[in-house]
Image 1 (cartoon, rainbow, N blue to C red):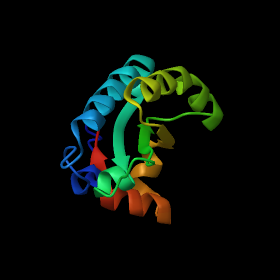
Image 2: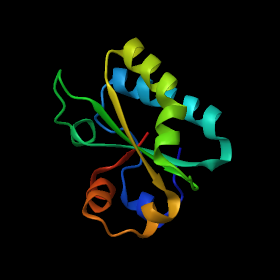
Image 3: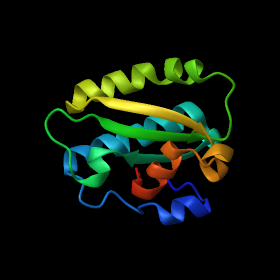
Length: 123
């Protein structure tokens, strides 16, 4: 899934050196998120140790989920908990997700988002 923003053009365009198990998990996660959010889903990006190629056996898969908009962060966590739990168990990798509004992803100059933009791989 591509975010379509200028920021995503600077982010990775694929899963690069990520191993096949993580690619399969990422594909399943994107499909599941598309089913939950439909057109509201604007992008799914991997960041952190898997994106940098420094993951080890204890690493979780850090995922940034860009949504058109949302009211309460906790609602999005609840909405995706069953999907994320099932995929984490199925693939043996814990998935940690962060939700961000599309406008924040494009414009917010927070240290966190700047770092994610620099290392993100499109899931």
